[in-house]
Image 1 (tube, helix red, strand yellow):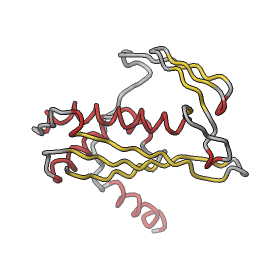
Image 2 (tube, rainbow, N blue to C red; image 1 turned 180 degrees about the horizontal axis):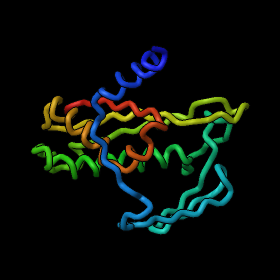
Image 3 (spheres, rainbow, N blue to C red; image 1 turned 180 degrees about the vertical axis):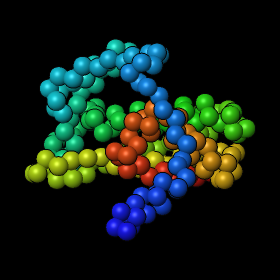
Amino acid sequence: MYASRAIRPLLRQATRPIAARRFLNTENAPILYSAHAKAVGARNGHVEGSEGLKMDLGMPKGLGGAGGPGKTNPEELFAAGYGACFQSAMGLVAPKLGIKMPPKAEDSIIETTVHMVGDLKKTDLGIKVDMLVKVKGVDKADLEKLIEKTKETCPYSRATQGNVITNIEVETM
């Protein structure tokens, strides 16, 4: 009798539908492109990349640094990379859903904000992402469907899934 009571909750869970998930074995998948970057001096240093990136870094004022014009930080770089990658993935997914994206670059905009969260004193840190997707000429329902499918395709979204809270807001222009 005890065993059946213990098993019942497990059986209820086992019968729940599981969302289809694509599994990519990144260990054995063919490499399509590799980027390389070198960081020297941490948050107050300099980064250089294999494709011409050369940026000075500065600790943001919000984290106790001096900040300063002409300097960036890992969160800003991540926000730019995530937004650009997500937008590219939208372009790959849209035709498969029968959605026509606007031809002009300025008619599809992604604004990404990366928040550093946690406690510096306890060195318990993480990030949270807010993304605003604005597209001209695509109705909101189609855009929301596109976003959901893009989350399954975008490498940044897949890498952060389960690790980083990402809030995506959709706006038509």
